[in-house]
Length: 154
Image 1 (cartoon, rainbow, N blue to C red):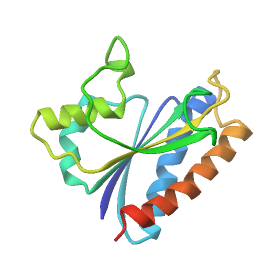
Image 2: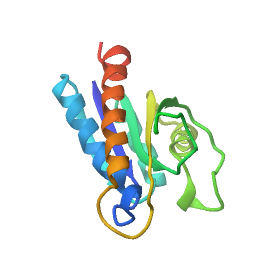
Image 3: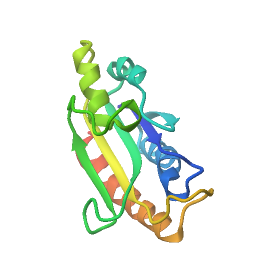
Image 4: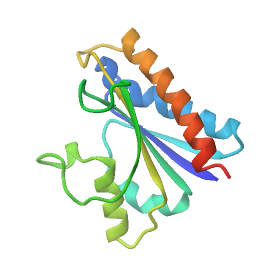
């Protein structure tokens, strides 16, 4: 299995940078379980990514989310599908579902995709995660490992 793991967010806005730490950890996990993973770290999702998706068997998107927008565990892991709706007013606020829809629209392959989002406590200027976000990231990784073994590494 070949995976693209894309971590996005701003690593200079404390917990908003969790995707930049989570993505390499997910890629290492995939490699340790016999898969192949490429990591891509971005401040935001880019439309040009859409044409690359057909090269992979699995897409994993790693990002931060604001408190109170997901499960009570402080992280959310879910399969996502193409959705052409913009989440905000411009390209700076699109989610992975929009980029998947773009891939489908240009006739590209859209492999299975998973979003791993971790709740942040602070989005202020600064580097490094808060202790709480770091703990939630560890829990998300543990949960994702189980899902990876069960659903994608066969």
